[in-house]
Amino acid sequence: MHELIICDLGGVLFDIDFKLTVDAFQNLRGYHGKRIAFGVDDQADVFIRYDKGQISTTEFIAELRTLYGFTGADGDIANAWCALLKSPFTFATRTVAALSGKAKQIVLLSNISELHLQQESKSCGEIFALFDALYFSCRINLRKPDPKAYLYVCELHGVTPENTLLVDDSPANCLSAATIGMKTYRVSDPSKTEFSIL
Image (tube, rainbow, N blue to C red; front, side, top):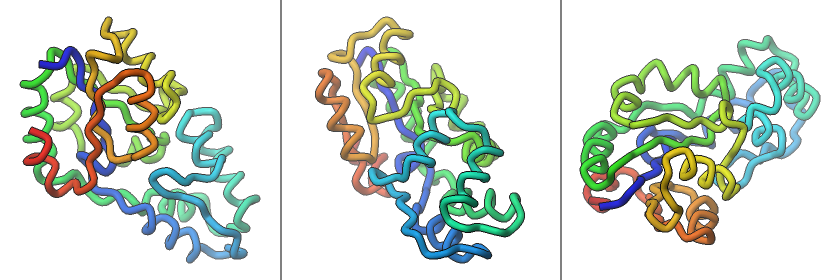
């Protein structure tokens, strides 16, 4: 029995595809060809700052225009940003419920921007309700793989990293968590998560 399980959202409970957003950005009017770094562990600074809530949605879209030349409507840029969001995995609620039986507390910790959170919240109510607490990078201003994000959550729940399990799909996030003593489980194939993790 773990004292605390920290579970990721995208790539673990919610199906995402970073390439869909990169493709959508490249198809926007005005795009001038600059490389768009947007992946699990490879993201341009503007995406990281938006995830951490350091810039507003309005500022984010303005920076994207400057960086990539986009000339379309704000709504078109926002839709392209959200293109990676597919849907919750069919097994998501079962996985969280099963994990809950293996820990005294289970919380969600997600690197997520305000626009993505607004979109995912529409279909994740049932999933969110299964957690003892929800932590979103855009709200707590901390983002994985910064160890401070894990330590922040552990401290709030009165648990040491050594008694905490991280469930995440990012190699960088798992490596960072391990350096502060957390146990980690990396989800390499989300479709098998509900079987292999339990």
